[in-house]
Image (cartoon, rainbow, N blue to C red):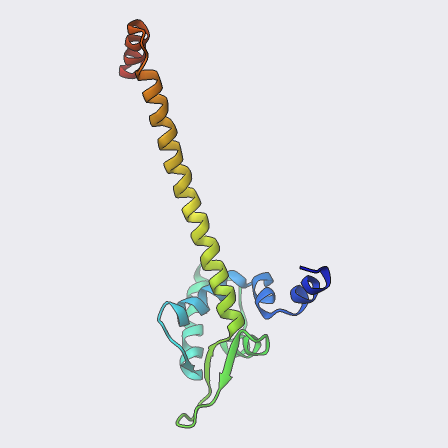
Length: 157
């Protein structure tokens, strides 16, 4: 990787822009919950607006200072930032929206990072159990009967 390529990527990538956004946790939660969790490929503008309005209401109950703009403003901004793709189907009278490749990439990155973190915590716990079991085996397998009795008494107490 060359520095110039990395700098250009960090300056111009919609995926990086999304991940670096102050609102990334809420944007990603909404987009994931709306599109990925429901296996939605495309959503009409009015339905997307309604879902975002509901999400914002729920969000403001716990974090009232975040995302105080209108749903329409966010949808337009996310389309401009290339996080959503807007198109009109021949048989539809309203625009449809779907996740852009950049948004898909950001969601996938976060899902994998969270999954790795959760697996690491589980692995650490299992490793701790193995180490404790090995220590018990070492302490409990002493050839010296007095040492073994001392260990068993400590364990009992």
